Image (tube, rainbow, N blue to C red):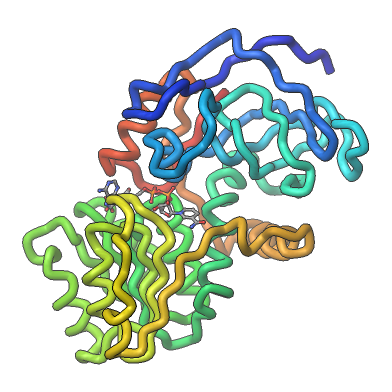
Length: 330
Ligand code: NDP
């Protein structure tokens, strides 16, 4: 496989709005180091976390090529790196995915099984692994649990609604707008609240009513700033609130006294903490593969954007215009 010296990539030199995303055609192709593979990406995932690195909410060195996941073909194998060969069809988690070629950690790379497309896998890879860890480890969901899931029509939310229903939970999903709510309902959610509508703005009251005043067993909240207080209000006594994202801004520092009266447990997980070892990574990727292969987990691709439209991609994501996952075609 001949590897060019330069490639298409999206680079940011400083933090800021979507306008700092620069599409370049002459970015140097990286050389894989020890423990790395060079992957020729056919498709890259766009995740909300990319916006945090762009704005500086999550600090990272600049200049930076954003993007945390992709799928494609191994183009070169770094020194002392085993388990993969040039030509293998793989998906990976790492950094610098908004590019034609990425040097990725071999220990966070998997061969894609036959029968799963690269698009379906990237639409469910980082998001799907997150969802599985949240529902199995952060709070192990039990059959019959009442669960509140915010942003249920998003990249992670669309997958999480399905996983929660398959585990026998009673799911209350929130989403912004009628179309998103209809999508969440179609996945079997027991109650869907449009938290941007006049009636749905009082979602705290609606959730309490739906649970007979008791509250939910667990809240999965990735919206953060706009929802965190309501999430604490609707969780039951001895329940759990899982904050796992900041789509509206981060949850402010929490006075611990606030969680005392109901003996609430709070968690602030991140995917990589659950898949640090190869064994953990393979456990969850195998689980994801079997859900995809059996058809139990469906993906939803909002749109596959050409890489040169990257500014639009971030604008759409932050304007809450997307349902399911956005993908980039390098
Ligand atoms: P989404 O596709 O879900 O996009 C974010 C969604 O959040 C929007 O579509 C919107 O849905 C909702 N939202 C609510 N308030 C706002 C706001 N003020 N501005 C923008 N969006 C808002 O993104 P992802 O699937 O990539 O990620 C979902 C969440 O999960 C993110 O918070 C992300 O950080 C988090 N995450 C955390 C991980 C971890 O390891 N902790 C790993 C993966 C994701 P609506 O219009 O319905 O309100």
